[in-house]
Image 1 (cartoon, rainbow, N blue to C red):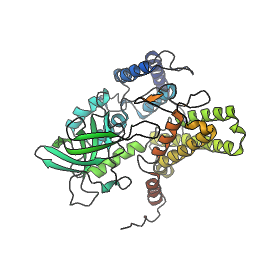
Image 2: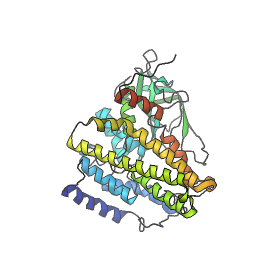
Image 3: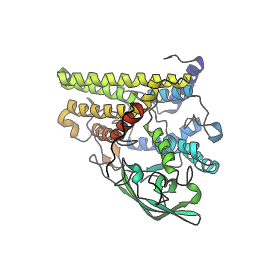
Image 4: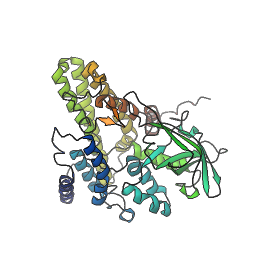
Length: 411
């Protein structure tokens, strides 16, 4: 495993670090940095434009589609420096990370020219229309249908747990286009405008008061015939590409947010005396150990990619990684609540000084007061579900990595 960086990569690091220092708000890196709601709103509105002007959004994309064509190592250095500065690197997660790469891989040239520029400049927001009330882990059983009517698809059905659906301009939607085919074969992947008659979005209010999850109802909604990605009835294969992007974590930056939470948990336990409890100390040590395993495995994966080696152990990491970090984080957030005790259930509580990750920077979402620690706790539960549930991930590991018999199918 080669942990060294080339001189060119280090020079590129200096370029990124300089750009961040020149463009982030004054004092951003200070421990006690805070922003007023007005300043936060202005930053959120202006930052994507700065990222676009700097060329940092999707910078590893080919230059012909607006990226910088960065090498793998340059992309790693870029992610590391933005993570170090705790600066957002995306205009829109669903656009930059999920549907954008999917369109690059599967889309027509016309789709690339229409959608990719708007993803890059941050003017188009997306949501993911996969799960349905009775089609979650068994996603291929989905019931939403699209019927071709001239040059348009007419869509009817319901989606649920659609994060950010109330803000989105477009939805990348899985829908059944051939009801007579086997369930995996009759699905298409459509790009559907959200702001049209026939699309109703309802927020699902969570226990912490936020409503980022939505349910979406399609009643004779429409999208152009040419908005199929990857071909009609080929949506299952295309969707698996999107899910692969969603399950991934950056090799050398994914562990950093957990490391930050670990430090806050230690400080919190030290302040209130729970650090002296053997069970708390043992669980903190276990969390730290798993964070280091995640870090080292990320470096193994990166080294294998850069050298082009086919390491079976590294290949197995791709199947186990998502389950490992999500289960690790769920247990860690349960530990955080145990350290804080009953106070963790109160609004606007955080670490020893109220400084849980994100607390000082954004204490309100959609107008609701939020407990940052509780928000992290609730989100950690969802992490074991989106991108493939832990149960599904265990099946993948058992069948594809360990070679175990397939799980029996029930009628």
